[in-house]
Length: 237
Image (cartoon, rainbow, N blue to C red; front, side, top):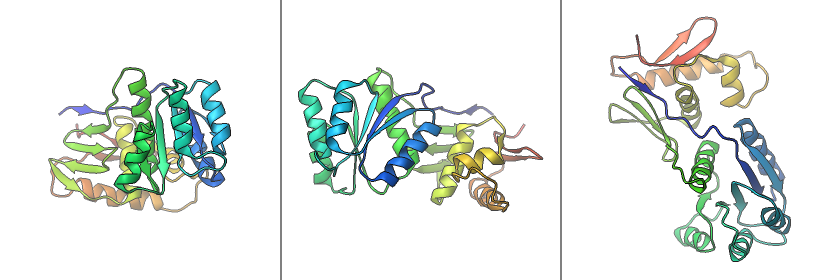
């Protein structure tokens, strides 16, 4: 059987985060940096507008409600000056009319809070690739198992598998590195955001639950334990 892992962009992007919530901004900067990108941060609309207007970025991530100058004004002002840098709007306002208003102001995408970082990252990478004239795949496949990063749907053999958020992140990371041994340290840092070993069996428990869900009622195991090393996602030999 064949295995196809559709990888996200490998090229680092310069990303400007315009967000006044320091905790949220700090999390985004850290997560994007760990994903291989180069994030900058502006804490208000005026400084964000100035940075976006005077420096080259691949993607802007703009909170809608900002001090000094709101996010929609930042984006529309940039568009009036001929700046076409793709902009992803983040907002707690997620109704249809809110999204339409954001897109009409010049936003290229709109994501309502709260959001999953995996979805945010996928949308950023799509915007970055589109600017370069390339489309990015957002689906990982291993044998007949399929994970859609945007819709958060997981299917095997055409049947939907319901996963909890942490299980989805775990599977996404394993499928992203399909065919490679993934260590406990890699999972702790990239799925749990731990940079130390909590000395618990949290990984084993989640892997066991995930394995039971993706391999239930099917014949071929895909998630394998590599004794003394970690785990690997691949079809059976």
